[in-house]
Amino acid sequence: MESFLDGASTGRGFSFAAIIGLLILLTAVTDTQHHPAAGIAFGMASREWDPEIFGGILGVVLVLEAFKFCCAVTSTT
View 1 (cartoon, one colour):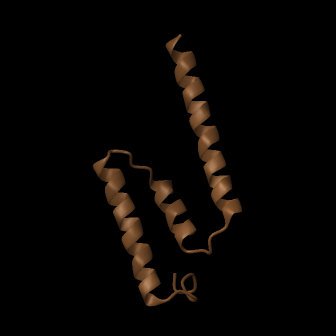
View 2: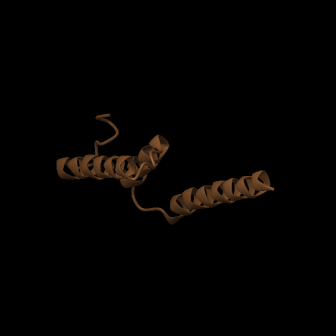
């Protein structure tokens, strides 16, 4: 873990931990736990902003949501 945060300041490391902790708490309170989402959030927070990565993650989420919607529609008929 130390090599992962080599370029990050201590304050930035604590902010990563605080953000991920709040997101995990929020998902527990809203009963929407999704543990890989915490990993994605940590991965996004620990790197420079890259629209291609964000777009890729958003695209996959939309495809999965469309698949879920289609399966729900076909199971009710």
